[in-house]
Every structure is written in C-alpha cells, then in structure tokens.
Length: 265
Length: 262
Image (cartoon, chains in turn blue, cyan):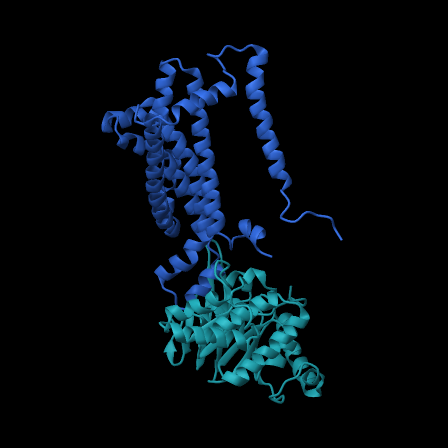
C-alpha cells in the first residue's frame, strides 16, 4: 500500500517554475533597496506594483488595454486569414510557389518597424497604420508555416482520398487542411507574439492609442515606476496570449503526435 | 469486370527513361479473387496505381466494368500497404470509415448502418470512437478494410496490405479476406510479393516477371474453396502450386540477370 495523498500530484516543473518566479520577484524587491538604486532608475517591485495598482482602476488604463487588445486581435485575425488563404493557394500550386518564392524571401525579412514612416505618410496616425504594421509582420509567420503544412500532405493519404472519389475541395477540407493545422497553429502562435510587439511599437512610435502610448506618456512625465508597471502589463498580455493559443492548439490538435502523448491512454 | 490490355508504363526523367511495365495483359472476372505476385521491384505498385486510376499509363488500357479508366473508377476501393498513412489520424475509426460514404451521397442513417456493419465484419465493432493511432497495426489495417467494405465496391484492390504486420496477425487477416470474399463475392485483386500468401488466398494467381514487366504465368488455384491455415498449407497440391510459382519467379529473376532478386 502506498501512502500517497489523494488527488493528482503537483508536477515538479510547476513547483520549480513557481519557485523561480518567487525568487525573481524577491530579487526585484530586495536588490534595488540593498544596492541603493535610486527610484527613478529601478524602483523596488512593491513601488512598481503600487504605481500600477493606482493606474489600473482608471478609465484611461482600461481604454488603453482595450485599444491594444483590439488592435492586436484585429491585426492578428486579418494576418491569419490572409496568411492561410494565400499559403494554401501558393502551397498547392507548384508553379505559383516557384514564381513567388523569391519575392516572399525578399519581402519577409523587411522589419515592420522600417515601414513606420511609410505607414504614417500614407495612412496617418490612425488605427489603420498600426494595423498595417501588425498585419505585415504577422502575415509572413502564418504564410510560411501554412506553406510548410501544405507541403507535408502525405501522398498515401492524398491517394486514398482520390481513390475514394473525393474531389479537389473535399481533399482540401479533409486531407490538406487537417495536415496543415499543426503548422498553422505554430504560425498563429508566432504571429500572435509578433503582433503584440508591433501593436506596442506602433503605439509608442506612431502614438496610436494603447498601452504603448501610455508608456510613452508615463516616460515624458518621469513616472519611472509606472513605466515599469506598464511594461509588466505588456509582458503579462504576451503570456496570456501564448497560453491561450497553446490551450487552443491542444484542444484542436488532440489527434496530433505533438499533443496526443498527453491525452492518449 | 477488370481488364488490362497491353499496359505499358515508362517513367521519363531528364536524363533517363525507366520502363517499369512493358506489356501487361490479364483480366479478372466478376466475383473472382485473384492474386498478383511478382518479385520485388517488378512494378507491382505502379501497376496497381494504373489500375486504380491514380497514374496514367504510357500505353495500353485498363477497363473497369467495361469503362476505360482515366481517373479513380467509382466502383473501386483500394486498400494500401501503408495503413498508418492511409487512415487519417485526425478522424476516429468510425469517421474514417464514413468519410468516403459522405462523398458518395449516402444518407445519414444508411452511413451509420454501413459503418457499424463493416466494422463488425472485420471484428472491430467495439472501437468506433478510438483513433487509428491508438490501435495496433493489424487493427489499423482492419479499419482500412472496413472502410473499403463500407464503400460497397464492385472491385477491391489490395496493395500488399499485410506486408507490415507480424506473422500471426497476417494469418488472421488472410482468413478475414477469404471470409469477406466468400460472404460478399466482391471482385478482388490482391497484390503481394509473398508466394505462399498468393497461393493460399487466390482462386487464381497471375505471376509477373522482373522489370521490364510482363505477365509470366496465369494459373488457376485448384484448392478447396474452404481454406485453412494448417490443412491447406499442408496439402501436396498447395506445395506443388507454390513450387511452380516459386520456379517461375526464380526463372524470371535469372532471365533478368539478378539471381537474388535484389
């Protein structure tokens, strides 16, 4: 008889992770005080959290958080739809893929931030220019992953579908799309992170409404603790995004090798 | 039911051409169970893909139910050797079996009946909701066979379906094929490289030569219709037939200058 307590044991990684986070927080609190770092350089964690706690209930903060989230979500959604559609078409038509490969390889490495002046020039400091940057940066992530996914269709699965009389559209739906899904999920996860970076960047640089603009405002007001606090919020947002996409991935791809080990008996 | 006349397939790449099939002529009558056996590398898979309408021949023609094949024929089901890749891992067993029926325009109730019946026929009535990758190799190939059965084909093609399963499973699956053929009478062409399997399963064995491939021999299997893994394989007639087929294949390999069939 084992004397194990009832309920699932807490995994070791969770314990270690929580401990690591706690130690980091402790260091962030203690080190500035011990080393005598001035508050306008690096305030202790409690001061940062205090400044943030004062900021969070304000309508201004909530509006900024909402604006960032909407820009991020909208930009990501457009990029995913475009990236998947173009990726499926380019991926399944070999001559089109060869025709566009060099162009894609040329356009993809252009840092989105380099397009800021252009976006402002053409679209002004509106939501549209922020969206343009977000979509441009995240589109490539989805496109490239989708094309990898389409290229991964198993010839035997494809022949099976053809031999049972499935037409082109049915094969896209039942063979190509499920095969590409894990790749698309990876693309979406990468794109989600990139989209958040670009959303904050656009707000900082262009001044479109959102957390980035609040950070810039706090900076010009010399509110160091608040700047740190808002940076923490953007980090937290990134974490929520990542965890959310991963959870979605696990749900949709429970059949896939990368997930099934955790679910199958 | 299935007629192959003067079938020829040449693969052309930039700097060389390979004649995979030279001149294949044979036919399978309605309700027959014919095994196609040949040395490895003789183009069995190429031939099967031409029959299934997945590959266009260079010359000659294939007719299924009187109609020339230019794409996958509607009344045909194919069971592939690579069951793990032929079944869709994102669908459950039942969904895999059902998918072709949805595209055949069968109603919901009928689909459900066909899926249940065909899974029961292969001994998998209890696992409709499992995913293929949760099953053993032999069970996965049973699912692929159930999918073919549910399709209610007029002709069934099987491409070395048991090449990747262990010996015991293989014997069970061979008997399953005999039983299903006995019960449904579906015209079946079974491709294999295993001489014993060809003689044990077939009512007729078509022997292919080495590449470039022609039909080397076409012999009826005059064994009792009721086959048994122990009794049938112990019959003198079984040994005679397998020795004859073996001899043919060895002669073909020798003629091609490859005594090992490597």
